[in-house]
Length: 133
Image (cartoon, rainbow, N blue to C red; front, side, top):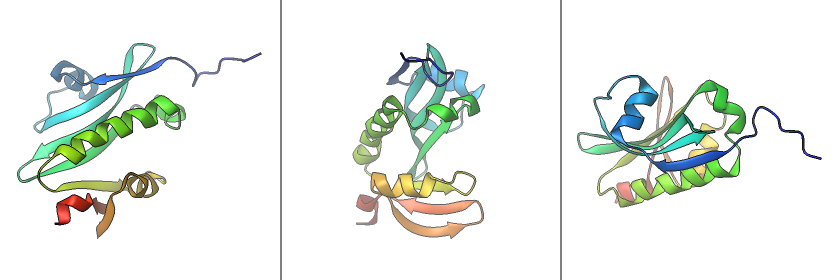
């Protein structure tokens, strides 16, 4: 018999709307974004996608702290892979920051195909390979 824990629950993903992004961040971000919203039991728990800036895009993943136990679940990984479509379709450089506070961020970016580019105080900078051509 399966005992449902707090990390169990239905996780869904959909394309993020402007309202979803504003709800998640509590404000309208200055950057334009293309993202996938992750919901657990109907509530927004995370976003993954790209933020568009002048001349480049930034790949990001942001989530609520209570969602951390769910990050290794298959629906979350599928959302990350779906968001990679934004990276692959973007015609300019795509950067990503491996956050020094997130122990698996470098490994995850490498697994997705990003390549190490530079070091900053707050983490390692990675770049999407097609951006280097």
